[in-house]
Image (cartoon, helix red, strand yellow):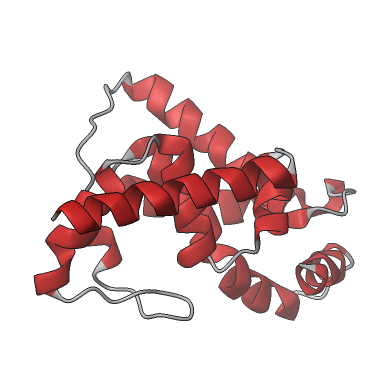
Length: 175
């Protein structure tokens, strides 16, 4: 996370080359934060791109030490604005198609025979638990980084993650 903060400061002071690395390191957490709100892959991609465009436009105003928190907050605000303007109703079905084109380090691949298993395991989680699991497993964030991004105590994030894993294991044992 320190390297992301350093890249953000470099970008702020005119090092445009830092943007590419910053984008690469933060894209997953921004995208999945937006997706968890909008539940629409295409729209989430658009809002994620809008977030980075807004970041570039306003980078001179960045003064915090928690760049990921700053960026995710910006993304969530844009997502909530979009959600409100569309007055969409959320649905509880989990669409895992968005996971199918991701590889393990920065992405994740799910073969078709395991898709139903993963989908059923994630269905038992509430939105907060699902977000913590996604940020940790797909976004690659540590519990401490998730606590910073979500502005929740580290103990709460650790507890939520453990609770989510326990729920998913119980579901997998049943199935």
